[in-house]
Structures are given as structure tokens and as C-alpha cells.
Length: 324
Image (cartoon, rainbow, N blue to C red; front, side, top):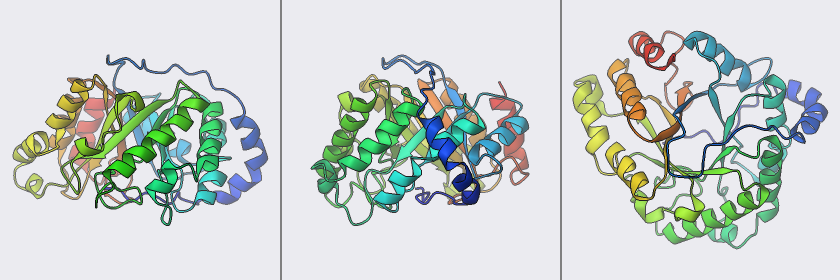
């Protein structure tokens, strides 16, 4: 589960002062290579999600994390706000340009809400918010036409407005397919990540798969939340592997559909300093068809911050496993 729907507004005054420049910058096309749309693994690109920083927003903290890790070129994860349509449309006008100003070479995975509170999935599927989605898709296409776009993530849970629970499976699929069409029109190079939460949660994930033609990457979010982690870390890892709609299901489902995998959100959760979870995730991703991952290096929603001494054993393991 994740609750990161409202973008941090720290540093907004700086953004306002540079807005005109940011809009100009987002009109530039950043020519970055994209992973193949084919089923083969194009390499597990390591990445990170971080808090807002200074002077260049999240880019500043991505660079700080790279320094701590001893590795450059990490992928970044970011979100457009999911509170209102107007806020989504307004934020996309400056946020990609802000990233570009901080580092024009940074690749960003964009998480896009499928709907907001007060707008049904049926309304999205019927095109009522096409203008907003077109604005977002066109702007991100200018910033990077080969970006990874993660739309309507964790819909097998019930904590987002686009939840597919409570009989909304068909409506979620229809809305997802419709919005993917808008993004593909803006840039055929976009890679669409369909991402679920680990576990059965509120609706079986395979009941809400939008279809192979609408998905390029099959993602899963996972945090170390199993209470068993504090008693027997190895047994907890086996639970993550073998539980219903766990890691093994993810691997097999992706292979069945000839898609690479991703872990857009993963990290320490609520069970303390667990280096075994870090090493196990590193080994799992290295030995499977995983195209990218983003570690949750923040304490927002989950206490995942690993680079500031909160989890010294896990931090040491992370640096060993992900430095190269």
C-alpha cells in the first residue's frame, strides 16, 4: 500500500520563480534510449524515490543518494498529484522542466493517477477527462518520449480512487485501456507499467490485467511488512515468494504474458533493520527478468529511509548489493 498522492510543495516558491524557464525547458525533447518493447530483459536499472530537496527538488536528493551509494545514473521515481484534475494539469507544466534543470540526463518514471475522488472509472473510460490526460501525455512526451509511465498502480488494493475492488474490475480495465491510448498517441515510445501491490489484497491481480497490447512492463510494489521478519527473516522471505499473488506469481504471470518485470516501489517497511530482505530482493531482481526498480528512500507512508542510519545493517547490505 502507498499513500503518496499529494506532491510535496516544499520549494514551491523557487518553482514559481523559475516557472517560465521550466515551461520552455519541457518543450525540449530529451533523446534518451528506451528499453525494447519486446519480452527480453534490457537490464535491471536501479533507481530511487526520495523526498523533495533543495535547490532542485527531488533531483538534489537523488544526487545525495547516489553519493551515499557510490553510484551514478540512477533512475528516479516521481508522481503527479492525485488530489484534483486541475492540480495534475498544473503540476505537469512545471515539474518535468524542474527535473531537466536539475539534471537533463535524469530518467524519471512517472506515476499517473487513473482518476481522482469524485470521478468514476466509468467517466474516465468514456473520455470525460481526456483533455487533462492529453495535456499530461503531451508534456511528458516532450520531456522524454521514451519514459516509463506507471498508470493507476496498486489497483488490487482499496486505498486509491481507481481501486478495482468492490466490483470495479471491468471499469478499471476500460479506464486503463482508454488512458493508455492517449499516452500511446502522444508518444509510441512510452513504456506502460501496469503495477500491482504484492498479495491478494482486495481483488486478485490477474482479474484486472488490462491486456498485453496495453502493457509493456508488469510491476509489483513490495515493502518488508511481514511480522515474521522480526522473528525469522528467512521464513518471512519465503512468505513473500510463495504467498498468493506474491513474488513467484509475479514472475510467472509476467513470463506468461512475455513481459519484463519491475519493482517501482520497494523497501524496508515496518519490521526494523532487516538486511536479509535487502539481499534477497537484490538476488531476486538479479536472477529474474526485471527491467528496473526504485528503492523507497523516504519515511513518507513507510519508514524506508536507508541512507541516514535508520537501518545500519540493511544500509551496509544495500551498498554492497547495489553499488555496481
